[in-house]
Image (cartoon, rainbow, N blue to C red):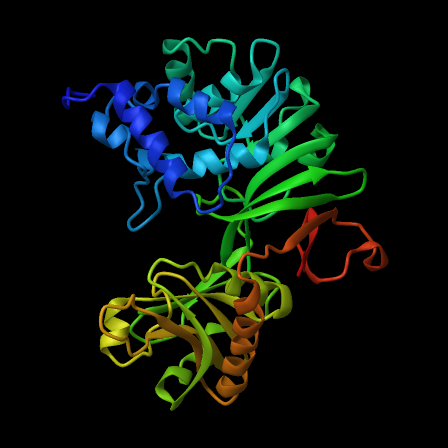
Length: 407
């Protein structure tokens, strides 16, 4: 498709990169990545998308899921997310790079541009339709030397390793053992990691017996096929309010059926945010301190029926213990004339222990407020690591890894 819009692909590409750099709140910059994104033609990897769509700061679906109400099977990632993950990865000239999730092949082309003529890039996907598409696009755009393999990304590609850099373009619930074996000591892994209902792009540096993060950024990715450690269930008869939690958490949604019909307790803090300020760190702090942390989503019809509005109805942190629940909420404060709107932060609880759970959420809001940009440290250890060898913090066990979240 890519029909003429009056602006050249080069102009649209430069506008997109300019906008990404201007809007990036982290201030992270890398001139080599900027050059790569201004050079590699994203529209050429999306031939069926109009130019304006190819250069919008949005993800583009390339393979739909035939199941009703299901997420797409494959997407071209949102460009600003691609940018900050490449900054996290820090590919050098000559690096050997492995990518999990081939997508359109565009990300692999960027990686090859950064690794240079002496570097190597291997991208993989479990879906043969996706790898066939990526292979065609890479060949058509002059990236014939990028390897494309069809396999479960959890297996890695040992025959082309070890790797200096590994990056996943799919949401991971676990860190497979093969990745530990194939990533060189001193190498970097960037992965959209899922825990306690949230998803964050975590940049790890590989050490001898562990991996330690040096960057944790908000992101959302399609979950990888084959990792099913997240659970979900509705907590109301009308199927309007849904929870998402990890398999190691003793959450039984049926126990909460009556909770939302009981009187609520609302607790407020003095913390406020503006209309575009992030409160993402509250969830991260809860995940590091409260084993009961999970995710709540609420259909707009639930609020019309009387449910107190979560801070973000599409996804907000919650605490669940037995037959009680509390979740993060906000409300607009009384604004003065001509002032920017402000929203105070708090929590609402339902059920016998709802008030206590709400107070515990507010305790983490208060801890977050004076240090809003502080990121947690995420340390990953092999699954057989003894407790005494773990860093201090909240321990989350997965089949292949022990995660420790620390503030």
